[in-house]
Image (tube, rainbow, N blue to C red):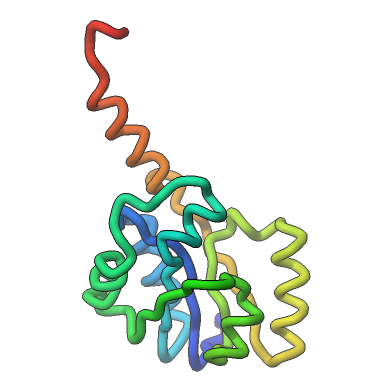
Length: 148
């Protein structure tokens, strides 16, 4: 049986909310008693991804507040480090898609969180849908058929 945590944390952009987001949120909630979702501000998204979200921060947060699996939604406006977030608002486990599982920085962060009594748990990434895929589909749908 998988370990059940007290407070769980998800952190992300959650732009153009889709089934991959819902799958991640649902899986996280199954593993914790209380789920906090931290949403990166528009400026942070631009800083790290070099593109702006389609949906503004406050609207992304409001959408997440309406999801029944979510207990709390907070904004991240400065540093998206899980260590800093744990110091601000402690949690027992940080949940993420497994697309970050092999990242060296995340391995270091996992060790640092474990020193604080927290863990990182990865879930299978939903490969059939992402915000990037939605953006690409939107661009394709706007293309002039004569350009092909």
